[in-house]
Amino acid sequence: MEFSEDNISRFRISFQNQEKHQEDVAVAFDEEVVTSHQLVVYNDEVNSFDYVIITLMEVCEHSPEQAEQCTLQIHFRGRCGVKSGDFDELVSMRNEICRRGISAEIESYQ
Image (spheres, rainbow, N blue to C red):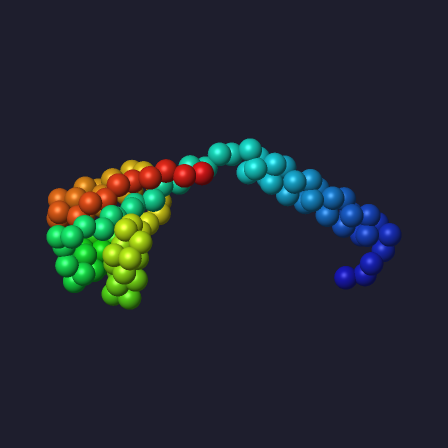
């Protein structure tokens, strides 16, 4: 492609339009408030490590390593956020974890 003055000026206009569009998108995104939710599992003195690990693998689709790490945090810190996402997505997981006798809640944060 040959660079004539006409091509360069069209490129500048196109580039300026792109920058304006990007700024508009950035402003719109900054104004949007996004609330996320986290499924938190709490420690207890009843359930075994293996039971909690298996539950996290089956309910939250964790890998064995991820489930083990979460279980260790639950044990030593008293709680662990095991899954983040939309409230509606997490409700069924929380219900199933609680049905299995493990304490869990959904917390929201911004």
